[in-house]
Image 1 (cartoon, rainbow, N blue to C red):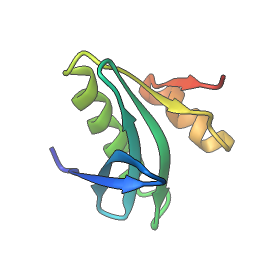
Image 2 (cartoon, helix red, strand yellow; image 1 turned 90 degrees about the vertical axis):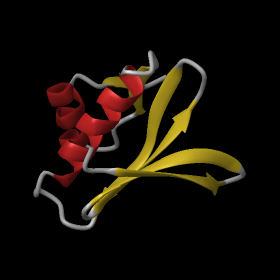
Image 3 (tube, rainbow, N blue to C red; image 1 turned 120 degrees about the horizontal axis):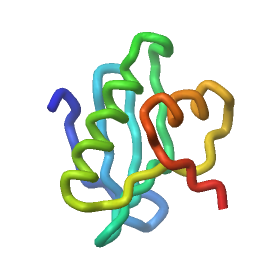
Image 4 (tube, helix red, strand yellow; image 1 turned 135 degrees about the vertical axis):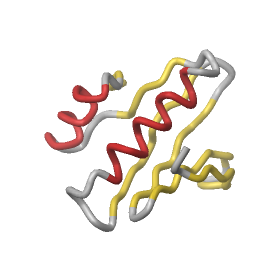
Length: 91
């Protein structure tokens, strides 16, 4: 795995933070689920988010968790979800 994972507290809850090169993503994690809450890349269009999300999806699904992301805030993020087969939780 190229990404690093750390546990951090944000807004009073523990989340798991993946970091890969210029990209950082925060995930809420439960017993049988993992949801992307936030992702940001300092260097867009270099594949950092794609690599990070691919690894996160494999990591959580290998633990039997349902993996998805919060509502995509823009069309590029929605396309990335579709490309990687990530469920968009929009409700």
